[in-house]
Structure formats: structure tokens, C-alpha cells
Length: 447
Image (tube, rainbow, N blue to C red):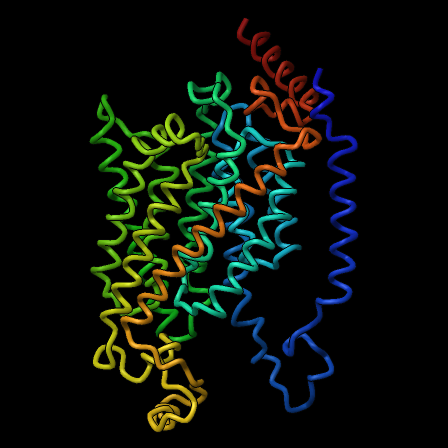
């Protein structure tokens, strides 16, 4: 009856083929950089200046977010905890091979839109196709449009969100609009999900600051992220109690809405926006995210055929748009009076071009400053806006095409009845036996 979802042939064949392809690509195109190449080390090299000691703490923090934070957060469904965590593990590990670190977050955010209604075969295919689309989009935006996006608001959050929505649009299941009997939570699954939220909350400053300039830029990024997260968290508690008919807190709000501030400050996280602005952005992002979950998600499912299972449009899409708007405003307001010479380091595209006398003056103040494009604040703001629309368009089209591929019959897609059920893809006999044993023992002693 469930032979069409059997993983015995589909998953191993797909993974082994992909691993062989990956091994060949690594053999030809992946090598050590200067910090990992033994030939470049000599008696004048200071081992403590290796980039490992600067970057590894951020790398480790982001790994905790990817594997523990996202994994636990996606385990909120009562009968889908194994799948939420384990499929996250599978997808993350494959995505890291395919993209080496940050693009992995893109795939896992998109995964939230199709949680519970896809097979591991479909998820591996989704990761395999999303990473190249992301890489091409990132290359085009950074090379030709050239933007500031320290926290990954445009190229991570917005891209992942609209790619995931494109996929779930194609995988639309009408019967899920009225709910599914197994799409429920339990006391323990909600606790596990909140643990994921806490891991993401604690390590989000590392995520937002990892790619910023070292020093005061990175300091501001950590500060702004921490303030934005704290204000969005407090606001989420207030809104949750206010709009609950019984005046109680809703676990879904605590699990998701509290994180909105981390996204909302992303586009301007390393800029001189002031702590008060970061605080306000946290509140704005939380409010948009909360009402998105409450009103927009049901509307999109019923009217637009977009079943956003984890509400990624609220946590990453709406907040990403607010963040991008805030980043554009910060760019328009950035002046030498506020930033000093470092203006041209943070906003590198505004630096004078090669041959400009002012460039020589600035290079004396900031050694190593590279020539820029000589853009004005207004020009850079317009390029930021263009990047937002280009990224949303590219990710949506990529998501739609990927969804068509995932919808093919041999992808082991679960039936409507089997959605949100671990039993479809996991051997639960041992777990069931253990549970029956515990129940029997409790019954025996209670008698």
C-alpha cells in the first residue's frame, strides 16, 4: 500500500549518485586557501594569525543554529518529531557539502514551507536544485547590482522565503487547508521546539555578524541583533496574551514570533542606526510576524494556494521586507559626519573610483581601502531596491521549477493521509514496543 513511498531504492540511489558527483567536483574544484595550505607556512608565519581563530567561533555558533536550533524548532508536530529533526539533519549535511556553510540556512528556511508533506528524497532534490539557483542569484546580485547585505536579509531570508513559497505553491494539497488530524503538537514536542528557538535566539548575533568587518562594525552587529531580539521577544509575549481569547500565551508565538527581531535588523545590522532604531525594528518585525501568522497565512492558503506550513513568509519574508526598507533608509542617511572615513569601508560601493584624488586621501586614513564605484547614497539605495525585486523574482521562479521536479511520481511523495506522520519513513516498531513496555509497567505498579 505504501510501496510508492519506500526509500529502499530511491534514497540510496539518489544519495550515492549525488555523493559521486560531489566527490568528482571536490577533486577538481575544491582546494585549500592560503590559511590552510602547508606550503605557505614558514618560520616567519605566526600560527595565531590564522583565520581559524577569528572565524571558527562564528562557524561553530552557526552550526548550532543549523543542526540544533532549526532541528528542534521543526519538531513541534506530535507525530512528526523524528522527521522534523532527522530530515533537517539530512538536508543540512547535504547542503553544507553542496554550498559550504551559509547557503545551508537558505535550504532549511525553505524546508519550513513544505514540512510534513514531503519525503527525504524530495528534500534532497530540493536542496540540490536550490543551492545552484541561490549561488547564481548571489553571484549576479553581488557582482552586477552590488549591495550591502551584512545580515543576509536579501540573499538569505528573502531568497529562502520566496523559493520555499514557490515550491509549496506547486505542491499544493487542497485537503490540508482544513487541517490534518496528525498536524498537532504535544507538551513534549512544544518543549523541544522552544529549545530550538532558544538555540537560534542565543546564536543569532553570531549569524548576523559573521560576515561583517572585524572591529566596531562587528561590535554594532552583535549589539543591534541582541537588542532587536530582546524587543521582539517581549513584544511577542504581550501580543500573544492580548489576542488570545482566554488571555493566555500561545506556544506557536513563543516558538517563532520571538525571533523576528533577528531578521528585521539584518540589512542594517552593521550600520550606525542607533540602539533605539534596533529596538524599534525588533518591535516592528515582531508585530508584522505576529499578525502574519494570525491572518496572512490562512489567507494565503485558502486564496493563493500557498500552504506555508511553518509560516516562513512571516518570519523571513515580511520581516525581510521591513529589514530591507530599513537598510535603504540607513543608506540614504549615511554621511561622513556620522561615519567618518569608515563610510567608504562599510559602503564600499560609495568609495571613489580608481584615479580619483579623494581615493588617495582616504587610503592614507584607511590602509587597504579599495577603489569603489563612486555611487551616491541615492544611487546605492536604488540598487538595494533593485536587488530585493531581482532576488524575489529569481527565487520564486526557481522555487516553482523545483516544485515541478519534486512533484514527479518517483519522488516518494506521501499521500494526503500520511502527511505529518513519522511512521511513513521511520521504523517505529522498537519505539512502540518500548512505549508499550513502559505503559504496562506503570499499569502493573499502579494496580
